[in-house]
Each structure stands twice: as structure tokens, then as C-alpha cells.
Amino acid sequence: MARKTIEKNISYDADTGKYYVNFNYGKNEKTGERVKELKTYPDLKQARKALKEFNSNKIKGTVKTPTDQTLSEWIDEWYESKELNCEKTTVYGYRNIINNHIKPALGHIKLQKVTTSMINTYLLSLKKEKGLSNSTIRKHYDLLHDVFAEAFKQDIIAKNPLTNITPTKKQKRKLPIYNIAQLKQLFKLIKGDRLEIAVKLASTHSLRRGEVCGLRWRAVDMDGRIISIEETRTQAGKELITKGPKSQKSNRLLYITDALYNALLQVKAKQAENKKILGDAYDKRDFIFCWEDGQPFRPNYLSDMFKAFLKKNNLPHIRFHALRSSFASVGAHVNASERQISDASGDNLNTIDEIYVQTLDAGYKDALNAVSNALEADDDE
Image 1 (tube, rainbow, N blue to C red):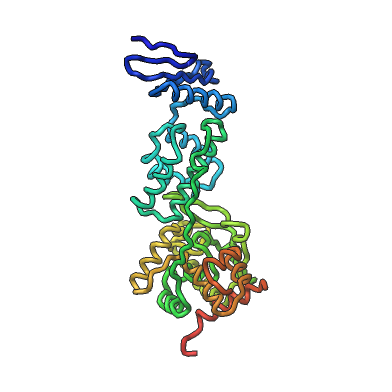
Image 2: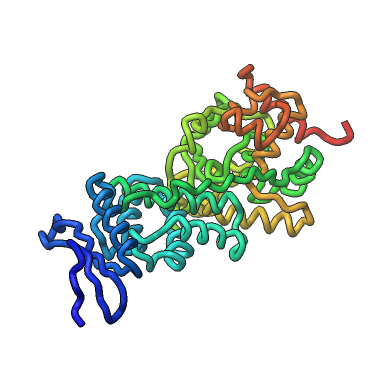
């Protein structure tokens, strides 16, 4: 038996015992074709209610024309725009989250069909099934929120499914750092090692890994005893990226202490020998922390080297970045102020207070000298 029209846009099929509602979205702006969608309901009351809500939302402008575009397809469009406007390291992080997590879990679902419940289930699975940290899960939340916010902005979806989801709070982890005694032991063991200058730049002058790897002789004024932090080298996967410092405050001038001055002289002398031997084969970019041929170290390899050195010498494991934290901790021990530590490290005061030290004037030269003297002093003195 054919379907019988009950009223406008509602019909009844006696064979199935269901009511069919025809939702008319109007014409497709690109093709000019009329877009319709047919849905079934068990009784007339529900069919009328659904049609009434649809027409009301259509008047309000909250009804979106159905599209077969999947979340995976939309997220590819979104990613292309991010590639043009974001740092390479940022989009590299996005790509890993998208390809390794979001697409396998949600990519096949139509963009307009993704619900708050689906997103909640996905975020919970990151914690329960994959064991990811709250900080990492927050990155997934932020990325998805941006993805759907852009779809809403472009009038593709009626609402952002993440609007009513409370974002995961980021964890404030206190990573292990070295105290003065441990740093002094590290200094003794690393003396003469290729890592020595990198460790001293990080622990006595609070340079980041990328700042150590990006430091060139042109940024060092040995006569004026000043280092200019103006360049950093980072990695996005296998790609090496040279760029400016992390923030405006990170672009800073640092006083060269006596201990660092002597360490730099030793590096300079060794590189002069290598230049004589290699001649034109020596890398002319003039990096301070580099191989025998002047080629700079990859930032990730610096971390690997540091980890291997600690293990070889039976020293407690810490991340290379933790040497910056150790610098702030030693600074507090020698009574350097928060402002001094902030000026030297290129971090804001909140970061210094919350992450590095609990108790920490702009005379950061005094702070650098105090930290250096504390670490270079003999235990017998």
C-alpha cells in the first residue's frame, strides 16, 4: 500500500505502521537543487512535534542544510588554514593528535552528526584506555573546540558540541630537578665533555634547549661579556626549524659570568683547531654547541645525549629542560629575587613562582654571578 498523505509534509505507511516527515531545507546554494530529508516516527503526535520544531528552528535560522561531509574531511580543511597561520611546531602537534587519535575514533562520522556525548566518550577514552595525562587531553579538547567553532562560524553546524563540556584542567606537574650538590657533581663529571657548554648554559644562565642549540658566536660579545638570546632551533618531527625566541621576554641579554667566559673560551679554542683541520668543510654558520665540523646538534639529540650521560654516570634522571628549573631553585637558595630570576630566564613571574620556586629589583647580573659562584665553589672552601 502506498503512503497516504495525512497533512502537509507528513504521510503514513500502513505496511510499516510509521509516519514519515519530509523536512524541506530549501535550495542548495551551490547546485540550486532542493534539499530534503525524510525521517520516520512511531506516531502522529511525535511526527507533528518534530515538524513543528524544525519549522520553528528554520525561522530562527538555526537549521543547517544536511551535508555528507565527515569530520575527517572537515578537519582536513581546518588543518590547511592552520598550516598557513601557525608555527610549524604547533601544526606538527595538531597533525599527531588528528592522525593518531581523532580520525581513527571520530573521523568517519558526519560532521553534523557529531554530538556532545560522542566527544565526551572520546575524551574519557583518552584517560581510561590510553592513559594520557590531563594536560595532553586538554590539548585534544582545545583542538576539537577550535575545529567545531570554525564549522559553526562558517554556518555548517548549528552548535559547537564542545560548548557544554567542561575542559579538563591542566596538571601542574613538579618535575624533578637538581639541588646545588647534585649540580656540582654534574659539573665535575661533565667537565671536558661535549655536553659541558650546553649544561652550563642551561643551568647557570637558564637557556632553553632550543636556545642552546640556536646560539651562535655572533650573538656573543666576549669583550662586553654579553650573550644575546635572539634565535632558537626546534624540531617538528624530523624537520628542523630556526626561529625567534619563545616570547618577547625570552629575547634577552645575559651577562657572561667568569665561569661561563672560561667555558666559552675553551669551546672557541677547540673550534679554531677544527676549522684549521677542516678548512672550507667546516660549517660556516658558527654555532657554539655543535659537532667537530661545526654542524649544529639536533635539539632532540641533545636530550638523548644528556639522558645517556646521566645513566652512564649513575646520576638521577632529569630532563634537560629541568636544568632551567634547577637554575631558579639555586637562585632562590642564594637569595636572588623573583625579578632577577625572571629577567635571567626569560619567564614571567607567574611561571617562576608556580613552577620553579616558591620563594624567590632587576639586578640579574648579581643573580647570575651568585648562581655561578655557588655551583663552581669547591666543597672544601
